[in-house]
Image (cartoon, rainbow, N blue to C red):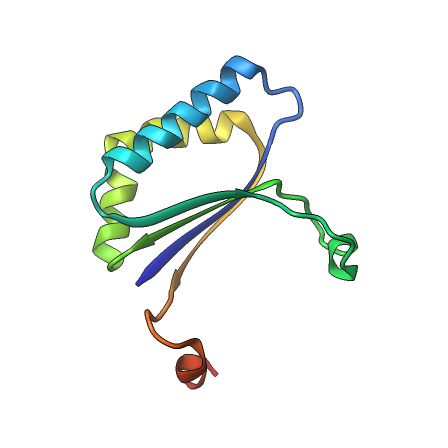
Length: 116
């Protein structure tokens, strides 16, 4: 399975209308791109852990998208709904990180040796 991980921080001056446009484009992409196996979007939780204060950047939101394979991710990236989302993504966010990972769809303890 391929996981597309996106961390993002909306611009502080983002208007409610722009926020709504971004959320609409995200909802449309998640609903209309057939190669997405599973998608989750969440907001950062702060609970006083020591590592919270040493992070070099603050990202309020995370998007996790799962695909069966690399071809599914590429199809997502090439889809017109993703193009619309991508345009808004870079104008609505102050900072972002995006990474793709090959994540075995198995017991994590059984797969640790594969990566070390």
